[in-house]
Image 1 (cartoon, one colour):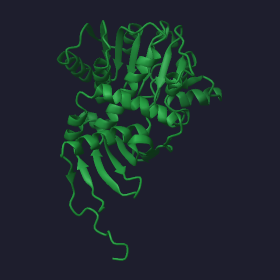
Image 2 (cartoon, helix red, strand yellow; image 1 turned 180 degrees about the horizontal axis):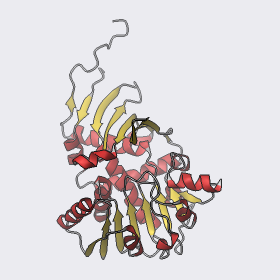
Image 3 (tube, one colour; image 1 turned 180 degrees about the vertical axis):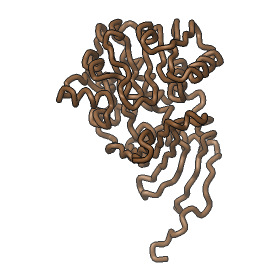
Image 4 (tube, one colour; image 1 turned 120 degrees about the vertical axis):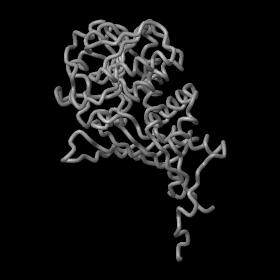
Length: 339
């Protein structure tokens, strides 16, 4: 068959994923299990950095997913923190899906929402599985209040979480106020508290979500975690190594997570060892790892490209099922080997 190429807009992505949080959670769990069983190829991410723009980066995440959602591809995601000053989101992204039989790319999807969705689904899955042998959290706190935080809250709410209190903190007061407004519009139950510092939020929350743009640790005191909360360390660089070393630590993939000056990477550099990592989320899913109830538990997910591929393939197939694919006519011009 003649290869075709479709473009899927952000609006189409959002429509395809709307109300599908439970299905997405099941999909993400299946991909973690497949990755654990060796059914994926997920090489290291590649960072494009700029000497004249040190806070900015663009990351390439190539990956290959086997099984029922068999697909190859690449996520190309930029992080430009200065965007937020003008009201633009920090991150923008595209996802390319390749046919594993021919290698031809067959779709380009707007991927900021796909990336946020797989991150949120992963975080919600971790919150559920890492709390099953502990007292289930009833007070959640969000440090960082952008797109990722909003998606994590949505996925937590859609997968059965209810909280007596929701805490909010952001270094930008207007962002914190905007997130509070979102929580109110979403019908969030219980008390909503906007904090003016991170410490009181951490001390008053038993589930803490870090979704910031921090480039280096800004939380340093292990005593703030003396009540042993469950921490979703999604932004990866918020916590000082000393906090991780005093906690039980779970990651999505050890080799991926312990690099690029993430907090776990800094902990490895400080100690020269990796034995502070208690396991992967897949270890917990399969029962190979037990989660302690008497220690702070930190989940630090680097983010696997195969998760983006799975959600992207899900979106592509849903848009195709609805007959709404925008195919670019004649995108591939040279289709005869000898002209």
